[in-house]
Image 1 (cartoon, rainbow, N blue to C red):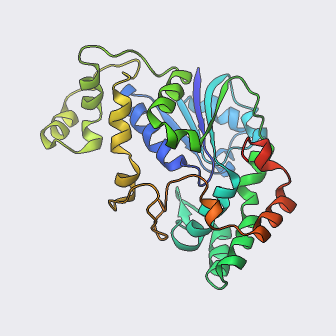
Image 2: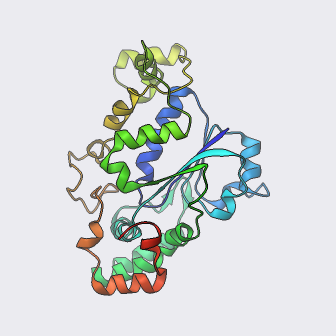
Length: 283
């Protein structure tokens, strides 16, 4: 059965994708990543492309409900975030750090939006970001959150208890097994050519075969979380909550919107998105 991960912009999706790519390498699973609908332009639907390419894991960074409905039976995870924090994180990212070409695909809307953000003050720019965020928030608003095959996860839960939540994610995706003699060592061996250290293992892994593993040992979870910690991903020595406004990994905490959105911003947000915050279970 197909496994899938559906991420949302500025919702720890890069972090999650890194972890999933490593897990796929451990188990020798094939990943197909979809950023834009043009990637299946040669097929009638997304589902037709997936049926043709037959990935083990599908990753989508901008999933739309209408496209998801064309997919074959699957086990999936959908990762969301407080939409107010998406706006705030988006403002700093779109102004300062987000690449204008992503996954080989140019983003002309971002180029124009960034030009505007650099010309106005923060309060005006944040209001512009609220409207720009419709690209990400409207699809969240129209999503079916009652699909039993999709495990709905909040970023806030992931950063509060990463080990516990990833155990649940991998269990839902049917990728988690049991610990046993040699399983963690086998997982590390399968990743040696990706991780680079120790050097001897990296070299040997290039010439010696992958160790067959059907499932991830639970002991692998803290190992991969350490590799992809906020501090290591930001390459700065910073801990979550310590800010670098020019970094893709700017702050890494929940409810930062309280530090940046004014009463006027919240009014504009509600005028544009209605009760989206409450419908997604936030307050």
